[in-house]
Image 1 (cartoon, helix red, strand yellow):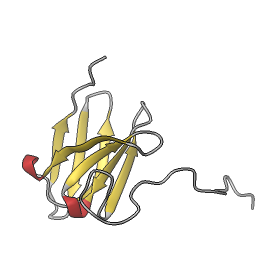
Image 2 (cartoon, helix red, strand yellow):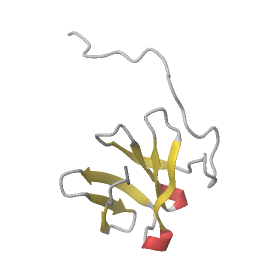
Image 3 (cartoon, one colour):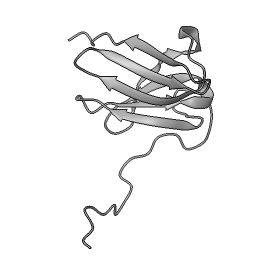
Image 4 (tube, helix red, strand yellow):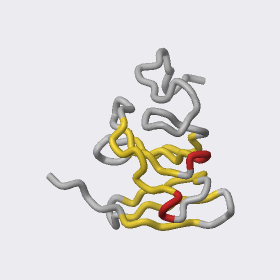
Amino acid sequence: MTALCRCVQVTHSHGAERGSGRGLLNEPRALVVDAAERVWVADCRNHRIKVLGAKLEVHAHKLVSADHGLDRPTSLALDHVSGLLYVGQHDGRILVFRVQQDEP
């Protein structure tokens, strides 16, 4: 059997320790990469969705948060055609958010 791919080294990392600050995560549960190579992260224990750049730099500290009804997000799906973000939560609910495009 031939291996399809082999990871050989870490190229980037984000969050050296747990926390709620701008550069920290607390139990990231799900990741989605969009067409612009941004990484969307369900930051479960911080009750937020963060958006990171391709090199894991912070783009949006709290794109969606507890202020929007988010409670321990555990899964993500991003539909770039419809502009919808689907977020599964620890309590069994799924929330749907409309994603507004960045201004040029």
